Image 1 (cartoon, rainbow, N blue to C red):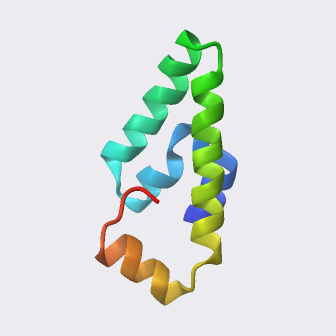
Image 2 (image 1 turned 60 degrees about the horizontal axis):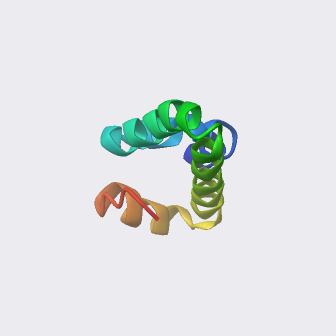
Length: 78
């Protein structure tokens, strides 16, 4: 689910909130909205690229590797 959220709603950081990473989700959300307004969408585009990469990474990991990395290890970024 986190991988699909990263692919489709990653610009808003929804996949981070889903995994329980509120601080990282808030950073992505604010960077997309506020940074996007200030930079005419460049910041939003950058966050979208990061979210796409994370979504693909989530989807390509095995269930055990995902669990160890993001649930047990609590790795917030890449």
